[in-house]
Image (cartoon, rainbow, N blue to C red):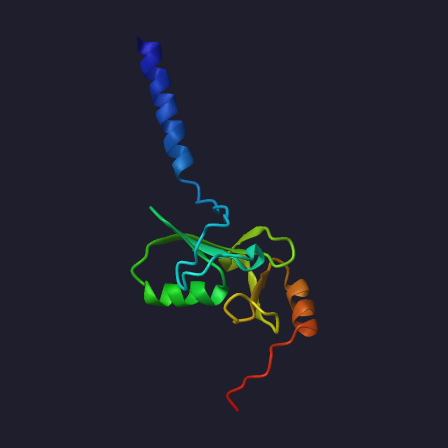
Length: 135
């Protein structure tokens, strides 16, 4: 009987210890919609997401994530992730190098993310931002 109480305690401590890890990114599925613009998250290399304690918000463009964060400053964000443009691997947003390029992104922002600053710089040099039509 005492052995079972001991093992229940060990399992409880292990479970509590596992809960302290930072949240992991969630896969993007074809049926996922952008939490900001409500369009399909159709091109995973531009995908990003915000993870809160009880919900995951997925985005099709980094501009959507940024606009959503400004509108929803009540969120208790546990983690945010963005896809590396080249490898399509998830990056913590605070570790990503974001550049505004001439690449056509789903919402037209041109913002892409990289894990490596030299790759971001090289990509930006070969894909400079499009001129603004506001002139």
